[in-house]
Amino acid sequence: MFFGFPQDSDKPLGVFTGTIQNDPGDLVKIEEHIFVGDTKDGGASMWLRKVNADGSEAPRYKERKENDKGEPGDSYPFEWPSADDMPGFHKVTSESLPIRCKCKGVDLVLHRGNYEGKSEKDLPWFIDPETHKLLAGFCGCESCRLFGGVDTWTWAFAELENITFPDKAKQPLFPNSTADLKALIDAKDPSVGTLTYYASSPDVQRFFCSNCSACVFYGADDRKHMVDVAIGVLESPDGSRAEGFLSWAYGRGVTRLDENKGGWRHDFFVRMMEEGEEWRERRGYPKNWQRKRREDALLKAQQNS
Image 1 (cartoon, helix red, strand yellow):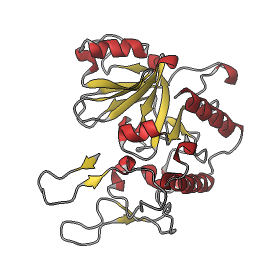
Image 2 (cartoon, rainbow, N blue to C red; image 1 turned 135 degrees about the horizontal axis):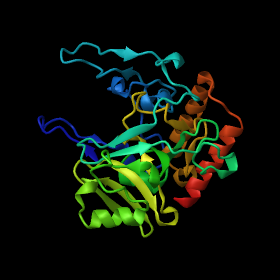
Image 3 (cartoon, helix red, strand yellow; image 1 turned 60 degrees about the vertical axis):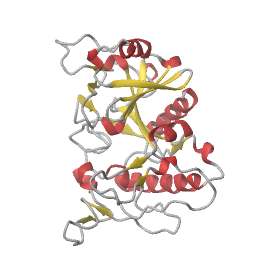
Image 4 (cartoon, rainbow, N blue to C red; image 1 turned 90 degrees about the horizontal axis):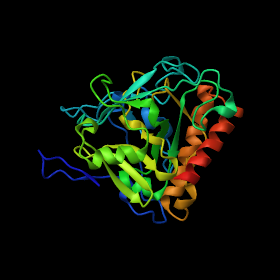
């Protein structure tokens, strides 16, 4: 809920905006983005540069707005990073990515599945038919928001058979179902590290690190052989969006948008969707039958969550 500063007890707490009630009005204004340099690719700031109701742009700083000497920090121009510096929609740059939380108590590996030779109709609904990248999308549901304290959550979708422990020779096989994963956690098996879970609904589990609290997976009993993977815990050389591994549903918008009707978040999400669509167009990412398939996939994810 809060971001504190133990070495400066007089400094105001930072409040996670996802914990703020969805009242009518214009309650939140993004003033700036800091430590954007850590993302390598701009991260979520690409669709959060001009989402304020008054049309103002939120500047993006490599580190902080001011350095230790009170001097202006380095900022990025509106178009940074350029399309030439990113993998783009089609290029695949990684066959696997580490899944690691802040304290590294959760240490796993996400692999690309082998879908060669499969027709589009035989592919899992979350696999891009052209690149075979995993689908990545946006969720604005109340459950995700209240669990993570973030207004909109970004998820990728993966089959559990494509998740492993880092050293498969020294570890047991990673569980192939969410029920088996829960059983390992309940037994306090050391192979899963600090991974634990919270049942946010009777048939839903939200897996997170018991030490640093990082969200890792979303699981549901009616799709026991797959999970949603929190994109923030993927370590990609391309940057925080892992575009060389994930196929983002840019321009698709936010699932569960209707849950936010009547409050400030609804209009915030609409402006975010508009900026995401504009950015997709400038990047030249496709808006064709592939996007339609991703739209259908996200709709299915919404119905199953």
